[in-house]
View 1: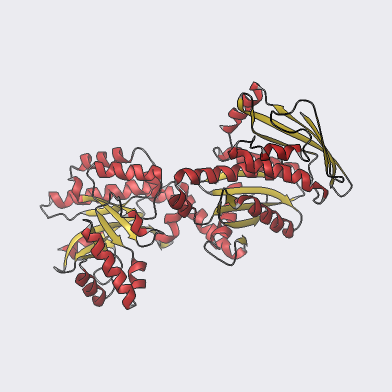
View 2: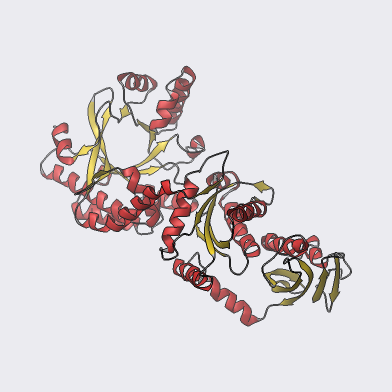
Length: 527
């Protein structure tokens, strides 16, 4: 089917055979595809964006001489892959005066090539993305480039309210819509989960702001659900820098406004450079640090409030660098979680804990359980059960002495499966940071966890008022009623300890009892 669009007169003409059920005399035959529901629902947004760009061409300058879109169109044989290629006649200002195009069925070879290309998408193969960026830099050496990174605010709540399947549809819709919005020289990729990146040329910063607003208008809804984004922008100043670090700079800008209700666009500032350099230092030194034993296991005692005695310990990690000294976990843990190195660090601390328990048993000392932290990244690895089993067999220690702490906010279908598998294997599971998530009570309904750890901030915030104390008390009573044990984190005063005991919570850890300490100090402490 051939079509012609006169932008000035706003008139359409169609030639050749039309798609069944489509009126060739419609005022807008392409829009008729949408009105007659001939476009696959998942492709409707990308098609609508494509059509809008053509129709608005009379008002908006467009650098392209043609636009193409590929989508599923319903025909006699059902939904099939079609491509629409449109060529433009423009005035000196780049406004479209006329558009002529063709809608045709894609050939088997084109569909096969599309399928092959999907396996090499920029989001699945970062090297492909980096190479494409370098090619753009070389093609336009004098032009200015910007990295725009964005994610969906509170995407976890979308999954919780509407289900994982709907959340997946939202992300697919964003990616498909980007295909319609971005021209051939605007590179885009889905980096992970709900995180996306667009690399584009620009002349003035206001162009980027306008482009971001255009992205928002087209991406901020799916079906009847709307959501918002946080955008981080990095203006490339040195094209020889690694593209990964350029993306990191955009990421820092984005994270600087996460949760900010008044601002959702941030440009990278020089003041954020120290964070970028810190990340680079961590990534450059993490492997050597693990090999050289710079990561040290610290233990923080867990106490029985009523008996005032140690009943367990939590294994924590500290990085003691020979030159920099102590590096705080809050500075390196998020970086290691993002780049995946946390898996190796997890396993290293797990082994340290197992070795410690074994030493206590060999010395005929009564061992206390040690709980180790399990990261989100590790829960997505299929070999976690094998890794834990191998360690227990290597050191010949009972399973109940190695407990597993998992953060409450770690929640999706794949991870939930791993948590249930750990439970079935007989591990004691502790839900860490209870009270920090968006729907803490909902997580208790069918939870596989054995112990709930009340979050430090939850305790400190609510204990300040009478109403807050009642919330804590009822939470403790409810949790115990459904058969779960509790540990309160961040207990710093005797008054807090007494209050918790009166409410029925008899286990606590915090600075009131003891700070995290090296193993040698813990051994003396417990003696």
